[in-house]
Structures are given as structure tokens and as C-alpha cells.
Image (cartoon, rainbow, N blue to C red; front, top):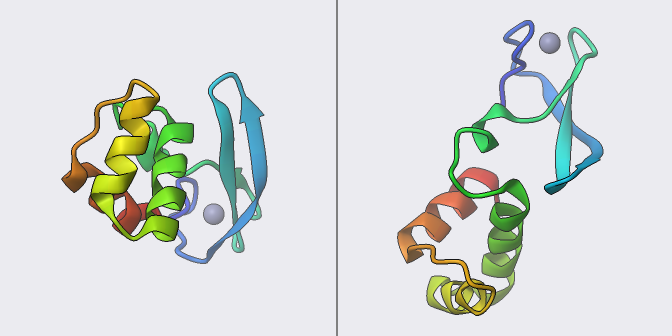
Length: 91
Ligand SMILES: [Zn+2]
């Protein structure tokens, strides 16, 4: 994952940031030592905590239809393909 400040690819996961929407993983750039939240989350139409939940469920269940049903029970409609895409991107 690329640092938005210096464009370095030497970044590592470093802790969580908590806000109204839930918690967000922070990344630390090894080059410029600045912290950032991966921007790819922000462009999505689903909240970050939902994406993270779907990804962790998918890792455990190994079935996108099971994850889809779990999210549907929470009142969230997500396609199975979207769940697979998330898990590839953030898993
Ligand atoms: Zn940097």
C-alpha cells in the first residue's frame, strides 16, 4: 500500500483510529514516518467497519453467500462479488 505523502510503498499496519463510524486501521510509512488511513476505503459507498466485518467473516466462513446472509440480517445489502472483491483487497 502506497504512502499518500511521499508515495513510498514501504508502509506497515500500525494501530487503530477510532471515530464515529467505528475503527479504522492506520498505516505508518517507514520512509516519512507519517500515519495515514488507507484512502481506498473512503471512495467506497459502504462504511469501513462494515467492509472490515465482511472481510473477517469471509476469512472465517470461506463463503460469500454466508457472509451475504449475515450482512442481510443486519439490514445491509451487498453482492457476493463485492464481498469477494473486498476480501481480495483488504483481506
Ligand atoms: Zn511516506
